[in-house]
Length: 100
Image (spheres, rainbow, N blue to C red):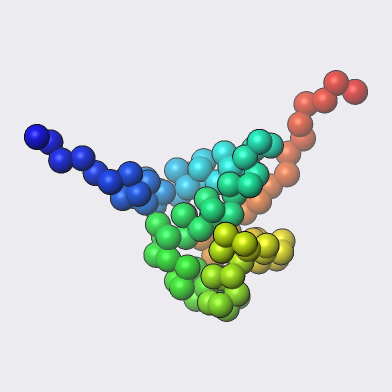
């Protein structure tokens, strides 16, 4: 019988590719999925070496990093942009087609 990989292992391996990680995070920013963005950011950080490494690469302390990305976390804009920047990502704004 063929051995199957654990989904978490597969996801972590897939998220190590910056293009995949960006696609994953952008999908979580979609209107209906915003509540999934912080868990997704935590998952990408885990795949890229963990929250401790992300804290070391950013200007955020480890305790603040863990608190910000906890299930009850509520990071501010600066913290999110610092986390993304330390992983080589940035937030962008683009126009949405309107019927005005």
